Image 1 (cartoon, rainbow, N blue to C red):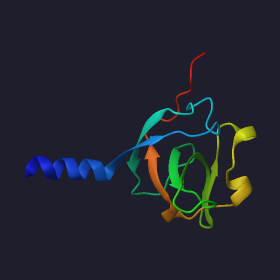
Image 2: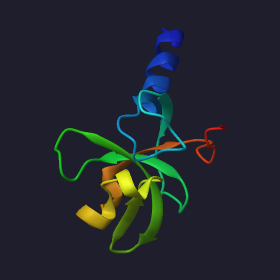
Image 3: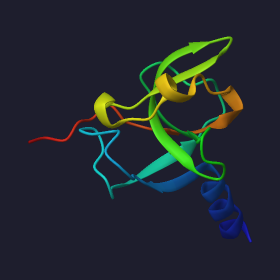
Image 4: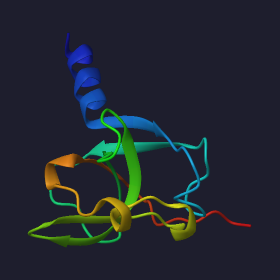
Length: 110
């Protein structure tokens, strides 16, 4: 039973997420699988997070935190030309930011 409890705890805290689209290039490639950790605190500027998509209920988005304020969280894609982000849908609420991607400051080497 102890092993099952550990597995349950880990699956509640970590989740694989597949990158769709080009909004996070060059940091993440379309089709790349990344691991995200449940976020229990306010996200920090510069972190990559997984949030509820404010335009498509039931969907998630992967974006970088650009600003945190009392009014909400501004999310931006790394590839501004191909990103639908807070410039389009506005600030998102803290409870809509669900996961953080650890070590997300890497970029793809050419």
